[in-house]
Image (tube, rainbow, N blue to C red; front, side):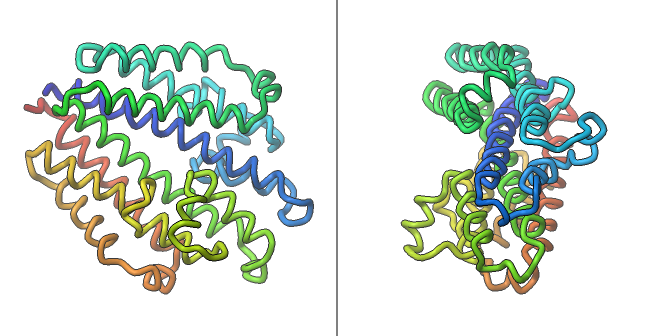
Length: 313
Protein backbone atom coordinates (compact mmCIF):
# COMPACT_ATOMS: atom_id res chain seq x y z
CA UNK A 1 0.00 0.00 0.00
CA UNK A 2 1.21 3.53 -0.79
CA UNK A 3 2.31 5.37 2.34
CA UNK A 4 0.15 8.36 1.33
CA UNK A 5 -2.99 6.21 1.30
CA UNK A 6 -2.11 4.48 4.57
CA UNK A 7 -1.47 7.87 6.19
CA UNK A 8 -4.83 9.27 5.06
CA UNK A 9 -6.73 6.21 6.31
CA UNK A 10 -4.94 6.30 9.65
CA UNK A 11 -5.68 10.00 10.22
CA UNK A 12 -9.23 9.72 8.95
CA UNK A 13 -9.88 7.25 11.76
CA UNK A 14 -7.90 9.22 14.35
CA UNK A 15 -9.82 12.41 13.60
CA UNK A 16 -13.22 10.72 13.86
CA UNK A 17 -12.18 9.14 17.16
CA UNK A 18 -10.81 12.51 18.35
CA UNK A 19 -14.10 14.24 17.54
CA UNK A 20 -15.94 11.63 19.61
CA UNK A 21 -13.52 11.92 22.51
CA UNK A 22 -13.70 15.72 22.48
CA UNK A 23 -17.47 15.37 22.79
CA UNK A 24 -16.93 13.01 25.72
CA UNK A 25 -14.61 15.53 27.42
CA UNK A 26 -17.17 18.28 26.99
CA UNK A 27 -19.84 15.95 28.32
CA UNK A 28 -17.81 15.45 31.52
CA UNK A 29 -17.57 19.22 31.98
CA UNK A 30 -21.28 19.68 31.34
CA UNK A 31 -22.17 16.98 33.86
CA UNK A 32 -19.81 18.56 36.41
CA UNK A 33 -21.47 21.92 35.85
CA UNK A 34 -24.78 20.37 36.92
CA UNK A 35 -23.42 19.51 40.38
CA UNK A 36 -24.90 21.36 43.38
CA UNK A 37 -23.37 24.77 43.95
CA UNK A 38 -20.35 24.65 46.23
CA UNK A 39 -18.98 21.24 45.28
CA UNK A 40 -16.58 22.78 42.77
CA UNK A 41 -14.92 26.13 42.37
CA UNK A 42 -16.75 28.44 39.90
CA UNK A 43 -16.06 27.40 36.28
CA UNK A 44 -13.47 24.84 37.45
CA UNK A 45 -15.25 22.09 35.54
CA UNK A 46 -14.66 23.91 32.23
CA UNK A 47 -10.91 23.91 32.84
CA UNK A 48 -10.84 20.14 32.37
CA UNK A 49 -11.50 19.83 28.61
CA UNK A 50 -9.08 22.69 27.89
CA UNK A 51 -6.37 21.05 29.99
CA UNK A 52 -7.02 17.57 28.55
CA UNK A 53 -6.53 18.86 25.01
CA UNK A 54 -3.59 21.09 25.94
CA UNK A 55 -5.38 24.22 24.73
CA UNK A 56 -5.80 26.18 27.93
CA UNK A 57 -3.48 29.02 26.84
CA UNK A 58 -4.77 29.05 23.28
CA UNK A 59 -8.34 29.40 24.52
CA UNK A 60 -7.58 32.49 26.58
CA UNK A 61 -5.75 34.09 23.68
CA UNK A 62 -9.07 34.13 21.83
CA UNK A 63 -11.78 34.18 24.51
CA UNK A 64 -11.49 36.58 27.47
CA UNK A 65 -13.86 34.64 29.74
CA UNK A 66 -14.10 30.92 30.45
CA UNK A 67 -17.79 30.08 30.18
CA UNK A 68 -19.74 27.03 29.04
CA UNK A 69 -20.74 28.73 25.78
CA UNK A 70 -17.18 29.83 24.98
CA UNK A 71 -15.63 26.44 25.71
CA UNK A 72 -18.26 24.60 23.65
CA UNK A 73 -17.77 27.08 20.81
CA UNK A 74 -13.97 26.71 20.96
CA UNK A 75 -13.75 22.92 21.29
CA UNK A 76 -16.92 22.14 19.38
CA UNK A 77 -17.41 24.52 16.49
CA UNK A 78 -14.37 26.79 16.08
CA UNK A 79 -12.96 26.27 12.54
CA UNK A 80 -9.72 28.01 13.59
CA UNK A 81 -9.08 25.41 16.28
CA UNK A 82 -7.55 22.34 14.56
CA UNK A 83 -8.64 20.11 17.44
CA UNK A 84 -12.28 21.20 17.58
CA UNK A 85 -15.02 18.70 16.72
CA UNK A 86 -15.76 20.77 13.61
CA UNK A 87 -12.13 20.67 12.43
CA UNK A 88 -11.68 16.98 13.23
CA UNK A 89 -14.74 15.99 11.21
CA UNK A 90 -13.66 18.26 8.35
CA UNK A 91 -10.18 16.70 8.38
CA UNK A 92 -11.61 13.16 8.49
CA UNK A 93 -13.86 13.96 5.55
CA UNK A 94 -10.98 15.43 3.54
CA UNK A 95 -8.83 12.37 4.26
CA UNK A 96 -11.69 10.13 3.16
CA UNK A 97 -12.20 12.15 -0.01
CA UNK A 98 -8.52 11.78 -0.92
CA UNK A 99 -8.70 7.98 -0.67
CA UNK A 100 -12.24 7.27 -1.87
CA UNK A 101 -10.96 4.30 -3.84
CA UNK A 102 -9.71 2.66 -0.63
CA UNK A 103 -12.93 3.03 1.39
CA UNK A 104 -16.48 1.88 0.68
CA UNK A 105 -19.26 4.05 -0.73
CA UNK A 106 -21.16 3.69 2.56
CA UNK A 107 -18.20 5.01 4.54
CA UNK A 108 -17.87 8.03 2.28
CA UNK A 109 -21.60 8.79 2.46
CA UNK A 110 -21.48 8.64 6.26
CA UNK A 111 -18.42 10.92 6.45
CA UNK A 112 -19.90 13.40 4.01
CA UNK A 113 -23.30 13.50 5.74
CA UNK A 114 -21.64 14.10 9.11
CA UNK A 115 -19.57 16.94 7.68
CA UNK A 116 -22.57 18.60 6.02
CA UNK A 117 -24.46 18.60 9.30
CA UNK A 118 -21.60 19.88 11.49
CA UNK A 119 -20.82 22.54 8.88
CA UNK A 120 -24.22 24.13 9.48
CA UNK A 121 -24.20 23.68 13.26
CA UNK A 122 -24.28 26.86 15.35
CA UNK A 123 -23.97 27.48 19.08
CA UNK A 124 -27.57 28.75 19.21
CA UNK A 125 -28.79 25.42 17.83
CA UNK A 126 -26.72 23.48 20.39
CA UNK A 127 -28.20 25.56 23.21
CA UNK A 128 -31.69 24.99 21.83
CA UNK A 129 -31.28 21.21 21.48
CA UNK A 130 -29.26 20.93 24.69
CA UNK A 131 -25.48 20.41 24.91
CA UNK A 132 -25.86 16.78 25.94
CA UNK A 133 -27.90 16.01 22.81
CA UNK A 134 -25.15 17.55 20.69
CA UNK A 135 -22.50 15.45 22.40
CA UNK A 136 -24.62 12.34 21.88
CA UNK A 137 -25.02 13.24 18.19
CA UNK A 138 -21.23 13.43 17.75
CA UNK A 139 -20.76 10.11 19.52
CA UNK A 140 -23.50 8.43 17.49
CA UNK A 141 -21.99 9.64 14.20
CA UNK A 142 -18.62 8.24 15.25
CA UNK A 143 -20.25 4.95 16.26
CA UNK A 144 -22.04 4.82 12.92
CA UNK A 145 -18.81 5.41 11.03
CA UNK A 146 -17.06 2.58 12.88
CA UNK A 147 -20.02 0.29 12.37
CA UNK A 148 -20.16 0.99 8.65
CA UNK A 149 -16.40 0.45 8.43
CA UNK A 150 -16.54 -2.92 10.19
CA UNK A 151 -19.63 -3.95 8.25
CA UNK A 152 -18.52 -3.04 4.72
CA UNK A 153 -14.71 -3.16 4.37
CA UNK A 154 -12.49 -6.00 3.29
CA UNK A 155 -10.12 -7.11 6.04
CA UNK A 156 -7.13 -5.83 4.11
CA UNK A 157 -4.31 -3.41 4.97
CA UNK A 158 -6.58 -0.40 4.51
CA UNK A 159 -8.89 -1.76 7.20
CA UNK A 160 -5.94 -2.40 9.52
CA UNK A 161 -4.61 1.16 9.24
CA UNK A 162 -8.07 2.54 9.99
CA UNK A 163 -8.32 0.39 13.13
CA UNK A 164 -4.78 1.36 14.12
CA UNK A 165 -5.66 5.06 14.04
CA UNK A 166 -8.82 4.45 16.08
CA UNK A 167 -7.13 2.60 18.94
CA UNK A 168 -4.03 4.81 19.16
CA UNK A 169 -6.29 7.85 19.51
CA UNK A 170 -8.63 6.13 21.96
CA UNK A 171 -5.78 5.06 24.25
CA UNK A 172 -4.39 8.60 24.26
CA UNK A 173 -7.72 10.19 25.12
CA UNK A 174 -8.74 7.69 27.81
CA UNK A 175 -5.44 8.34 29.58
CA UNK A 176 -5.92 12.11 29.30
CA UNK A 177 -9.44 11.98 30.72
CA UNK A 178 -8.30 9.90 33.69
CA UNK A 179 -5.27 12.08 34.32
CA UNK A 180 -7.16 15.36 34.39
CA UNK A 181 -9.84 13.99 36.71
CA UNK A 182 -7.32 12.53 39.15
CA UNK A 183 -4.65 15.22 39.06
CA UNK A 184 -6.51 18.48 38.40
CA UNK A 185 -10.18 18.33 39.25
CA UNK A 186 -9.57 17.13 42.80
CA UNK A 187 -6.42 18.84 44.08
CA UNK A 188 -7.52 18.94 47.71
CA UNK A 189 -6.83 15.65 49.53
CA UNK A 190 -9.56 16.51 52.03
CA UNK A 191 -12.15 16.15 49.25
CA UNK A 192 -11.31 12.50 48.54
CA UNK A 193 -14.36 10.37 49.26
CA UNK A 194 -16.62 13.40 49.44
CA UNK A 195 -19.65 14.32 47.39
CA UNK A 196 -17.62 16.09 44.70
CA UNK A 197 -15.32 13.08 44.36
CA UNK A 198 -18.24 10.65 43.97
CA UNK A 199 -20.09 12.74 41.41
CA UNK A 200 -16.94 13.45 39.39
CA UNK A 201 -16.01 9.77 39.09
CA UNK A 202 -19.61 8.96 38.18
CA UNK A 203 -19.62 11.65 35.52
CA UNK A 204 -16.34 10.33 34.13
CA UNK A 205 -17.71 6.78 33.90
CA UNK A 206 -20.85 7.96 32.12
CA UNK A 207 -18.85 10.12 29.72
CA UNK A 208 -16.82 7.11 28.53
CA UNK A 209 -19.89 4.82 28.43
CA UNK A 210 -18.53 2.77 31.32
CA UNK A 211 -21.03 3.36 34.15
CA UNK A 212 -22.99 0.16 33.57
CA UNK A 213 -19.78 -1.78 32.94
CA UNK A 214 -18.48 -0.60 36.33
CA UNK A 215 -21.65 -1.71 38.10
CA UNK A 216 -21.51 -5.11 36.40
CA UNK A 217 -17.79 -5.62 37.06
CA UNK A 218 -17.61 -4.49 40.69
CA UNK A 219 -21.14 -4.18 42.14
CA UNK A 220 -20.04 -1.64 44.73
CA UNK A 221 -19.87 2.10 45.36
CA UNK A 222 -17.76 4.05 42.89
CA UNK A 223 -14.15 4.13 44.08
CA UNK A 224 -11.17 5.78 42.33
CA UNK A 225 -9.06 2.62 42.49
CA UNK A 226 -11.80 0.55 40.87
CA UNK A 227 -12.39 3.15 38.16
CA UNK A 228 -8.67 3.16 37.41
CA UNK A 229 -8.63 -0.63 37.27
CA UNK A 230 -11.57 -0.65 34.84
CA UNK A 231 -10.21 2.02 32.49
CA UNK A 232 -6.54 1.04 32.63
CA UNK A 233 -6.15 -2.69 33.25
CA UNK A 234 -9.42 -4.46 32.36
CA UNK A 235 -9.02 -5.89 28.86
CA UNK A 236 -12.77 -6.63 28.63
CA UNK A 237 -13.58 -2.90 28.86
CA UNK A 238 -13.58 -1.55 25.25
CA UNK A 239 -12.14 1.88 26.05
CA UNK A 240 -9.51 0.74 28.57
CA UNK A 241 -5.82 1.24 27.91
CA UNK A 242 -5.30 -2.54 28.05
CA UNK A 243 -8.02 -3.23 25.47
CA UNK A 244 -6.66 -0.53 23.15
CA UNK A 245 -3.12 -1.88 23.32
CA UNK A 246 -4.38 -5.43 22.72
CA UNK A 247 -5.82 -4.15 19.45
CA UNK A 248 -2.77 -2.08 18.51
CA UNK A 249 -0.42 -5.01 19.04
CA UNK A 250 -2.61 -7.38 16.99
CA UNK A 251 -2.99 -4.81 14.18
CA UNK A 252 0.74 -4.14 13.93
CA UNK A 253 1.36 -7.90 13.80
CA UNK A 254 -1.21 -8.23 10.99
CA UNK A 255 0.34 -5.35 9.02
CA UNK A 256 3.78 -6.91 9.34
CA UNK A 257 7.10 -5.25 8.53
CA UNK A 258 8.39 -5.59 12.14
CA UNK A 259 10.29 -2.70 13.67
CA UNK A 260 10.24 -0.15 16.47
CA UNK A 261 6.41 0.27 16.50
CA UNK A 262 5.98 -3.44 17.28
CA UNK A 263 8.59 -3.25 20.07
CA UNK A 264 7.00 -0.20 21.68
CA UNK A 265 3.50 -1.63 21.39
CA UNK A 266 4.68 -4.89 22.95
CA UNK A 267 6.31 -3.01 25.82
CA UNK A 268 3.16 -1.01 26.52
CA UNK A 269 0.97 -4.09 26.25
CA UNK A 270 3.15 -6.13 28.63
CA UNK A 271 3.01 -3.39 31.27
CA UNK A 272 -0.78 -3.32 31.10
CA UNK A 273 -1.23 -7.08 30.86
CA UNK A 274 0.87 -7.81 33.94
CA UNK A 275 0.26 -4.55 35.80
CA UNK A 276 -1.52 -4.19 39.13
CA UNK A 277 -3.64 -1.24 40.14
CA UNK A 278 -1.92 -1.17 43.56
CA UNK A 279 1.41 -0.56 41.84
CA UNK A 280 -0.10 2.22 39.72
CA UNK A 281 -1.35 4.07 42.81
CA UNK A 282 1.93 3.47 44.65
CA UNK A 283 3.79 5.07 41.75
CA UNK A 284 1.21 7.85 41.47
CA UNK A 285 -1.63 7.92 38.99
CA UNK A 286 -0.49 11.17 37.38
CA UNK A 287 3.06 9.92 36.96
CA UNK A 288 1.88 6.60 35.54
CA UNK A 289 -0.47 8.22 33.02
CA UNK A 290 2.08 10.87 32.02
CA UNK A 291 4.57 8.11 31.25
CA UNK A 292 1.94 6.19 29.29
CA UNK A 293 1.02 9.27 27.24
CA UNK A 294 4.65 9.95 26.36
CA UNK A 295 5.08 6.34 25.23
CA UNK A 296 1.91 6.45 23.12
CA UNK A 297 3.12 9.67 21.51
CA UNK A 298 6.44 8.02 20.73
CA UNK A 299 4.60 4.99 19.32
CA UNK A 300 2.61 7.30 17.05
CA UNK A 301 5.81 8.96 15.86
CA UNK A 302 7.38 5.58 15.10
CA UNK A 303 4.29 4.44 13.19
CA UNK A 304 4.54 7.59 11.08
CA UNK A 305 8.25 7.07 10.53
CA UNK A 306 7.97 3.40 9.57
CA UNK A 307 4.81 3.35 7.49
CA UNK A 308 4.07 6.87 6.27
CA UNK A 309 7.42 8.60 5.75
CA UNK A 310 8.49 6.31 2.92
CA UNK A 311 6.82 4.20 0.27
CA UNK A 312 5.22 1.27 2.09
CA UNK A 313 4.61 -2.00 0.32
